[in-house]
Image 1: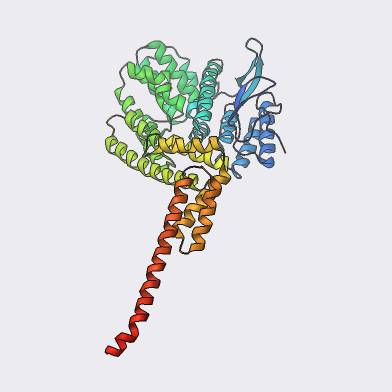
Image 2 (image 1 turned 180 degrees about the vertical axis):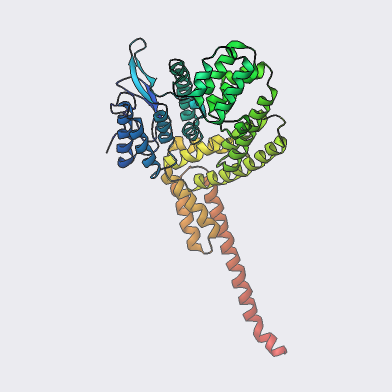
Length: 432
């Protein structure tokens, strides 16, 4: 069986099946693990990691894109694609003793806005999501440092030549920056907006321009199409603080749109809770209140389905793992119906760990519900007698014996009735 290798030091990781996070025993770095443990998938992931560490980012990205043709629900593949786009390789830091990410590609778009990163987050569980976000925030800081060292002016770009003319005022610089945005010339636009800020530090439109460069957008009207929250950006916060209220409204519209998408794609109550939180952040945007109520309604439907599913799992559980899975669902449901009672019932069953007795008990209950003859009740009484004091087996044994006596009594009554009819028949015939 192929083992997944550390994406930082490329040594084999020792992780248990189903584990989401682990710490490399060689470099000591905590990292996420892929969902799939198939040999072919693992080999390709290891190859992609190796190519990325060699700075062969395009070739590594091709490997990950090929992987997406085989498996599309693994967030680790999307995360690796994001690392390739931003030229991330890991190197040892002697001061802290761990491997840290190093940026090799200058991208004006923040990794926090990158589609591959957003796909990785959306397809992750909470533990993975937290790990990806923390590392992405660190990479975002490193990316900004890299951009500060990149030469933004080129001899063949007329707009960049104009940016070198220090006689332009802030308004002219912003206008030229907006023209560069329309042509998707991010470096030139960023240079103009920086020059505008130097000329007029309190100009909110210049910070708005830098925000558009950061998100690689040609126009503010496209901000609602973003799939990330802009509040992470210092350019956004500065523009709003200096007096750009329409930007805040656009960001809330973006949050609202993401909430609608998340609500429509929700597969469980947890995702609907996240959508509800986003609707709350969007303020009074459109009909956010109605959408929150819709999220609550859909969440209740999911909870009902999950509750019934967990009840069936508990009733049919024959192994420790099945009972544990049912308990986890009841725990997520929190106070829905009698979920706390069900959690305790699962816990008691896990502690007893007597699934053979439980199976016999359920068999006896089912037979008792469908029993018709004395032989049925005799078999059921033997089952409950063999269970001893397991659960309420003594009470069920008494119930079984009582039903057996009632069956005997009903048979006697029928026989007496038939005998009476037979005895009275000659007399009735004579009278007729």
